[in-house]
Image (tube, helix red, strand yellow):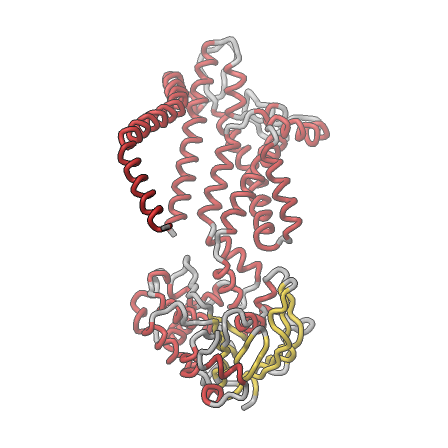
Amino acid sequence: MNSKVKLDDLNVHFGGTHAVKGVTIDFPANSVTAIIGPSGCGKSTVLRAINRMHDMTPGARVSGRILLDETDIYGRGVDPVAIRRRIGMVFQKPNPFPAMSIHDNVIAGYKLNGRMRRDEADEIVETSLQRVALWDEVKDRLKSNAMELSGGQQQRLCIARTIAVRPDVILMDEPASALDPISTLKIEELIEELKERYTIIIVTHNMQQAARVSDVTAFFYLGELIECDVTKKIFTTPDRKQTEDYITGRFG
Amino acid sequence: MNVMTSIDRSAAEQRNTMRSLPLRNTKNTIMTLLMGGALLAVLFPLGLIFVHIVKMGLSAISLDFFLHIPRPTGEVGGGMANGMVGSMVLIAMASLMGIPVGIFGAIYLSEYGGSRISTVIRFCADVLSGIPSIITGMVVYSMLVVPMKGFSALAGAFALALIMIPIVLRTTEEQLKMVPTSLREASLALGVPLWRTTLKVTLRSALTGVMTGILLAIARIAGETAPLLFTALGNQFWSSKLTQPIAALPLQIFSFAIAPYDDWHRLAWAGALVLVVTMFALSLTARYFGRSGHKN
């Protein structure tokens, strides 16, 4: 499998804390990579580095390289805004824009960047919502406020909003941890379908989820990458003892 | 042993509580009465002022008051039309100067600024809002009126803007800080630049609260007299240029109230009524905005 995103000796510091320590890893294209590990192991920090979200955090320092199709996204003259258009992100808690309708939330990436043609907008709204299997549920009330949707629907709306701007990579930061089991299942099915078009990197606390949805799993511990391999191998015969201990629930 | 004593003690406490129940009830009644008294003590002067202004103002107010400018000394009648329009002009100009500075300053503090410079700016804003308004007037007098060789609407508006800035700045900053980070990140993650995110997502979400702050600032400057005394000066007639002295309602109230004519006193009361009702309406509107903002 050819890789889409490559981390090369990635380090992240917050003030005096060394949160991510020399991580080198390949994320294969059109597949799902799960990042697992106990709380505070740096998995969300790694994820947020991939679309330069740390630019906003005072005191955060990122070093090393992150390659997206061979371009270093931290390289000189690279515009973080352009990077974020190619690398979308879905957050832990559904965060639709509260002042916008369902329709406008889907095309928020365009609307906030300027105006767009009406027919073009409608088409993007329909295809994006269909792709996240939300179209049939909301097609009659596209003008109502997005906050009226259930948590699971809101999260699928956020995924629709992310894919509407046609990114190459989708980062997901525990996208189902705030949802009930049925909504979780829907999100997981969705991830399975989305990987045909996108490269997906998902951080999860839930090991069963990682086993169900991912092709590759990376195990992080205390800011270091311990092991990264095909998911099946990680969950059956991991090479490292720490991985095995974590998978079998002996710590974490 | 320990368990025993703790049970004994709690039983004793319970007996104590039972015995002191009437006493506590009496205390409760006394305190309630005291609080009620405090409430009356606050409401009574407020009611007194309001009733007095309405009583004195209503008898003096007429259509003429809104349509005419003051008559020459000795003639009965006339109104404060120029004062009301002048106040509106001053408030509009002060808002044009003060609100953008306040809002953009708040955006800087909340979205862009480093922590050290923000602390300094915040401190300066607090000091600025604590400066007596007569001193603001004095400073503007020496900064604008003296070099421009004349009192002017411009100088008056500038003095009022100086009073508005810290109010708008601090309320806007508080409102921006209440916008959850997750909304900013949602927008940034869609490839929206920070400045667009700030204007279209962060400021947009805080808009009702920001409006409340602006209205409160306007209500505050609408009644300011001291900073206008030696900047806008006041005017018995209409002014046609912003570089001329301009009439303002509070200034007219001041000069009419201290004049030795009964008819002028009546006009001053009418002016006071108009001013108080306007400020009342502004505060109510601000509250309405504030409340509808909290619902969202």
